[in-house]
Image (cartoon, rainbow, N blue to C red):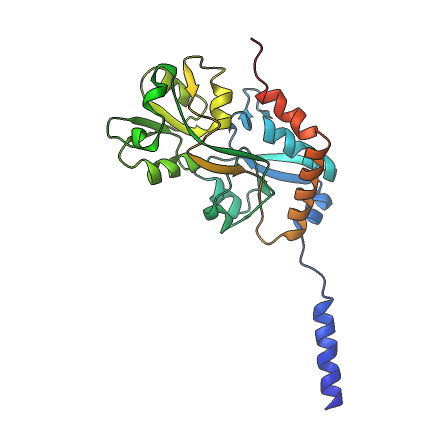
Length: 259
């Protein structure tokens, strides 16, 4: 009996001190690379230039994270519609580029601590701002909405504005032109994108960017159950904000243009 008890204690002890499962924190450092999915179509967070390079707030942040690990970034192109399938299929270690935190995504993955707070607002022709202030005004059969497929903008429209007309447009880099040219009335998007893009489209205005129709946060999409890697990313993000590096990066994209 004593021998059985001793064996049980040894087994329990061994289980308590078993080696933890492998973490991306170690794997990335061992191989020297960090693969990162990004759409490349969502300024100011991610944009694919004509020369094949990426730029944007989250691009610079991901590069900073990689430097802290002494590894190189390997960019993996994706779309908003295929972001989660690509990530879950293991095509990349993490995903960045203005990714909104949602409970549906949280069921399948971890998020870093929030990078920034944002929210859905109407982006409209400036002359029409008074017409599109509320959900009730937007949720009308006469309202022509335009959204990129597969992301949280489309999900918001289906949930909150089912009566309005909806066109899904695949190219998020020029979608705003359709509103400016009166081919659509409204694009529901995040306040940060609208505030950035209205500099490029002076006839378009962000409606109530300080009072969004829906609260949201943006973060990095991380592998589920990899607590070690998430803890590292969160600590890196905390220090990046505390030292001012994050603000310097954000200001290069979000600073108000000179009058």
